[in-house]
Image 1 (tube, one colour):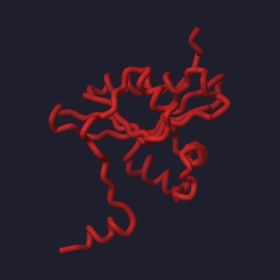
Image 2: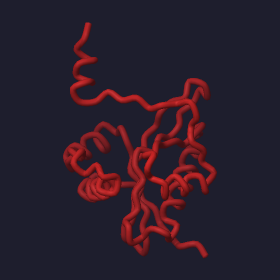
Image 3: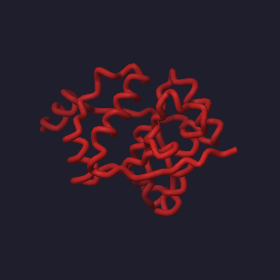
Length: 161
């Protein structure tokens, strides 16, 4: 039997709640020391600059998980896609279908917006999440490795000739 979850998009007054979920995810991923986001930064980038969106899943009116996502673009498909940056459900609400419901809602949003795909990354050690994604029909990308410039390496690349 399916839970009657509800969804809502974040509003500017939700920045502290968004940060709480980000910190929860960072703790789960053993990366808590990397979180430098603040409610003010989230407000600026999500609500003023509109560079990302946040969808909450609610159980009996209480936010129990979130998905932070943004649009990317596929030149091969000639259309936008949705990139899921973060998906997190509070530990006490896992196993109730919240994660699947969030992903299905994002898939519907992608289809409603005419997007060609929904994609995300997952840490290699996170077997429970990998098994969950596979159970939904998601498949890992073969022959692709994600690369990143950040911090000092980003500064250096931006300043060179």
